[in-house]
Image: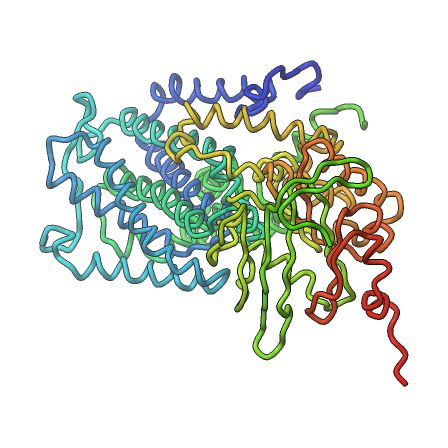
Length: 358
Length: 272
């Protein structure tokens, strides 16, 4: 009724291969893009930007990155925070060393540097699997944070040990530093998220994604049909770390502005992004969005509801918020272990036939 | 015995070509256990070659040697006339040797279509960047290889489950999807490890028909392991018989059937 694919025939394999093969999906996707690019920039204000939109956009990039590694390639990583820190510090060093070059290029380069670091820490994955690999990536997390804390070259010998983003502009509009405008910052992050999602989708629907999923589902069989496990795993680490590096760079330069590494990129961050991926749905790009939205939006929503509407004291609300978020995570995972993306798929299946049972 | 250099013609009139793969004095040990002892045989172009033997005879080990999963301690493998150095399994696969497994090894989380598409790894070479942008070579390859894969899907009659995740399929269909994945690679040798294990009579008949059709229509060389004697004798052109890691017979099904060693191995010998 609401959602139909009857009469939506494909006449070529290219049409069948596209990201949204069903017409209805495709139009909805265009509509979301139009709203995100043409409507929201005009109505966005600082509160919405900093409380909801920026964290959502940036975490969604990180979640896409981790989802490629964990959801598609099956390699569990607890090093996300550390890799975000690499992106942030790479971006900082590039911004201060080459002030004339566009920040956009710096962010992409920071992603590239993180990809190289990711490959380095991905090497153990050839020998160890599962929980043991998770522990090995945990080592990356602690080592990288320690490195950025202890080696003054990374924070340009500043007295506080912090890094802070100098003012940089895109087309003459400042996007980092103190004097930014909400719409410009929003658009920069949105462009990066859109590009990340498109690239991730292209990779995962093509041969690279099939190789990753083959390694995830059965690595011995993957090798027997011709997948080089070394290259497949390392390419997953590289691509994943690239996105995580980009999100780390944006998190530092555009969102926070100033960063102390242990605080901003600690182990909590690794877990947060991992939870986003698990709750959203492993092996699904949409799931990365859903997971990021869930964990960013829910606390804000609850706070507004409890403090704003019901007038409860802030400290009680803060505690309750933790309890409710925790309980909801459990409820969701019990109801659908494959995450929000699977719930969404099931809902679509149902809507396809609604209101008829068959 | 058959002449080693020339091809031969089968009873049903199919022309069999020269030697594609030759195993020379292969010995494989696991610690003190000798799994394969000094075995030699060849596989010829276009033939259906069976390896049979009682449980634990070393048939699967032999297949694993061919597909590069084990490297034998002694002996040489010749592929298309050249000696093959010790290789990783994925390198062997890229030379054009595809296989299926005794206990199905499909990618459960992927759709049937994606599973079969993975068979095309050898032919799809677009770089990561082209794939990321879905432009140029990557886009072209997806469509071209999809056409080949659709032919295989059509051939094995699994069109209706194309988009179904493999994890949801029943056993018989999974076996067929696995065969499709191996076939999609357009291999020069197709290795089948007990393609009929655990099937009922009807499914066995289907699978036999597919194996014969594959051989007939694509001219694919097939080496298979199977327990069901009736099936082996009907399908194959030549049979290698193994027992306790040794070769005890080699020849056409009729020759093998009359071989006293083979009869002893299968029926047992009276010790007096």
